Length: 242
Image (cartoon, rainbow, N blue to C red; front, side, top):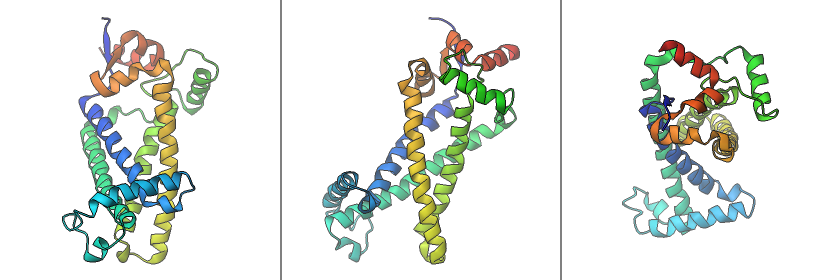
């Protein structure tokens, strides 16, 4: 086996793995909660999932902490209530993951390369050359698209969390604030789902990117030749630090 280059810490691997679990729970339960507003057949499918959740939940309604009124709901309504509870818990879990990751990464803050190497113009050109022109990349550890995705995830989830809290404690806010939070939460959720689909495709659907999957989910490392070819600026940087 050839030499390996370190790309991700154990903390980054841990955070990414568990962020996937909570993201899946958030998306699934969010779609169940909003099933009646979704077009068919999508809406019908998630309404069916609500019934599937609600039927067994009716036997454990009291243990779940549901009020007598909520316990009297139909299987569908009870399923939505259960999904809403899981959604809130998953949101708290995702926030916890993000906080642990942030606190763990703060000591390295001075090494964060947020602005693209070589400037924005060069970063855009490199991205187009690589994905459209199929030319050799001149990327650092992350290309412009990946940097924007990370920033988008941090900002987007922060807004989703804030708007979710507003809706959760709606009695503490005016109706106009709650309505605005609901609209923003919905739009951000759909944008996040679309972004996640693109992110997964770029990670799995492009063969050249697959060594990064092993690095992100298992070893934290990638073959030296892969890093040298696909992330040459990062490779040059770590070699100069040796």
